[in-house]
Length: 142
Image (cartoon, rainbow, N blue to C red; front, top):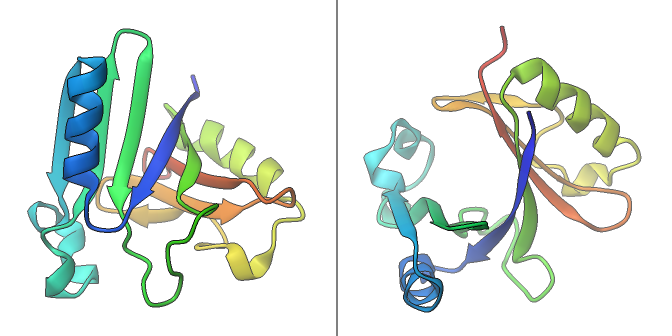
């Protein structure tokens, strides 16, 4: 089953922002630093204290977030700091939707041409043909 939540992108202040949202909305907040994951080897050491994944769940409200990791290739600016975060139970389910949504996507705005294997499963990101930013997370390919 697919699920979709807003995905917020911060520039080094993800912990502060998500803590504020938790104080306002209540709920449970999970913060994971890049340096505490196997992905740290893929990034420079100065990014290891940044948040790679934050998740706030309060009743029916869910927010996911991260600190910006794409610099200097992409810089945060108003309009590219929010995405739709699509999570799938199976790789096949997510891949089907990824491929459909990617039709006509700007190749210069695709982080990966396909779902990419990462230590926590599979990942993909692109801006679709309507300018909407999508982030995908799922299981590793079968």
